[in-house]
Length: 129
Image (cartoon, rainbow, N blue to C red; front, side, top):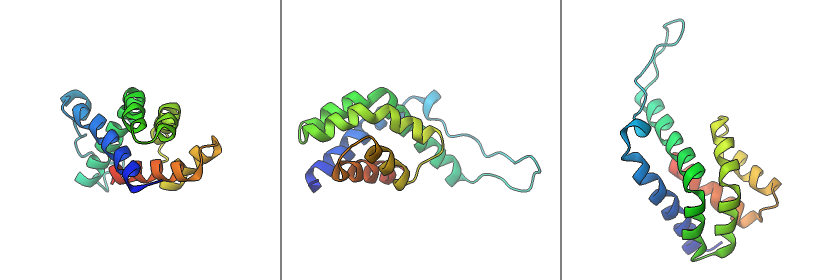
């Protein structure tokens, strides 16, 4: 997959996430909390990661078709794969599987060609930080 298509995928996903971040009820990061034994407190980085993860999941669940259409302008195949599998990717991320390998494997197991599966996984992991 060309760098141009990879960049378009990144822009499509971030463009979908950005408006969602403006909604305070959905974008508010959780306050740090103590665990049950009181020995540790979640850090700001944990809260930020959780916030970013929720936004990406929300974008995939509700903006997958839009992202697919945007990406489809440069690569119709990549756009179709993203539209088709955005809900599955969101379910995977909701289940706590946020690694590049888990996203990639999900897509490859759904018969997405390697180049598109890698690009989609690259972008999602980059956005999650």
